[in-house]
Each structure stands twice: as structure tokens, then as C-alpha cells.
Image (cartoon, rainbow, N blue to C red; front, side, top):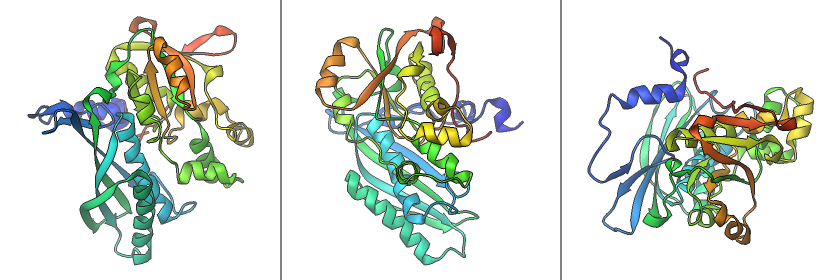
Length: 324
């Protein structure tokens, strides 16, 4: 049986988690959120742990990006997970698999890019591993911390919450699609995909006010779905309220695609998706954060719906699957 036949990446994770111990002393949250959460000696803080990897020709291609950009993006993707928990990043482990013919300059460029992101996000590289592999692979484990009263989980959404998202969506996927088709791509869309900057800046503003939170790495639709899964709720998203990146419409026209698809299923925007009680909306607006309310949390029985033109509701679908 192949992985896609059981439902893809997340179905596989659900099966694999049954085969390993799921509890240990001090564990608050294990598999199923943006990061694991552990108790520390400091009762006011939790330890956060996340891991991610990038594989050549799967997550990136040197046809349109450089090694320095890959290194930068690898760190930003991990920091984004810490931000989604309401936390701050700290120490980082980096493991590299490199084909033997890899130029030393390529490895150095990877680390230069990682260094740029580490300095931007106040992260320190403390160790890792290097080995031989068939393709360049960057694997990162990042530690962070979060105040106990600022921890944000996917499981904390409540019926009646508003659904919001920072920034704009779809730019990264649109930039990638243009590059894959060898079409002209603006500098902004290119940067949105190759050197995305995660929203660690927004986490301190959101964490005291929101209920649930997740980063937008796989697209708006699956991220909403993850919150619904963990919280046992449904969702209604207004298509005309989704904040598209300004370059998405032109990219969609050039590619003959629906611009909304880049936001719903494109991924790698690394914005933050969250739910909050309506009473906290004005406080968040006063913070000065650029965000958009795109929908609301509803009872699970109502489903997960996208409201399109004329008030018609359709299933909320889309998203990246590693095993398609």
C-alpha cells in the first residue's frame, strides 16, 4: 500500500504515532501541533521543540534558487512554527546530507543563508550532523520557549471565534508556479517564495489575545482544517475576504489559473492563522498589526465551508500533499 492510498502525509503521521511512545514526564503537547511543548524547571515557561527538513528537488531546486536562499528559508520555516505557538526561538541543531560532489562553496552558502535568518530571529546554532546523501537535505531542530499564559495551540478554537490571518497569501505559490513555467516573475514574488520572512514579529501581539494559532505553511485551507481537527469544530471562510498578495492576480492570469487557489492550497506564505473571541478584535486592531478577518468558527456539524459569490457554500479544499 502506498502512502497516498491511505490519505497522504497526515494520515501516515496518524498511523506512525501509534507505533511509538506518546507520553513522557513533563510532556504537555506531543505530535499534532506546530511544536512539542515540555515543562521546564521554570514554572512560568514551557520548552518548545520543532523540526523540519528541506530536500533538493522536492522542496527546492537550484534551477531557480541559490544555496544561500535555501539556508535562509530552512531557518524561517522552523522559526515560523515557534511563532505559531506564541513563543520565541533559541538554540538550533542543523544536520546536512550532501552528495560527495557537492562544492564546499555550496555548503558555505547554505550556512551563510542560515546565519542571516538566525541573526534576524535571534537564533544560535549549537550543533548538528553532516553526512553523505543522494540529494542535498537540510534538517533543522529548533528549540524555543513560551510563557505558560501565552501558549497557543491548534486545539483551542471555540465556536463563535473569528478566524484571522496576518499579511497576504498566495505570493509564494504564485512565484514558484511562474518560475516552474519559465515565465517572468516579479522581484517581490520571487522573494516571497525564495526568502520568505516568517511572522515572529506578530507572535507577541497575537499570543495574549488569540485562542488557536497555526502558521500557513501548506495553504489556508489545510491550516484551517488542522485547527478544526484539533479543536473539534467547523469553519466558514469568506472567499472575498481572503487577502491575496498584490502580484497573485497577474500571475494567475499568466498561468490560466484561479488566483484564490494560490492562497487556499499554495502554502509557504509563513503567515499566522488564528482564531479569537470577537471581544478581543478591537484590542488586536489597536495593536497596529496588519491582519484580516476571513471567517468564523462554527459547530463541527456545520462542516468546513468556503463561501463564494452569491453566498454559495462549497467544501473548503486545497493544500500541499508531500506524497501526491
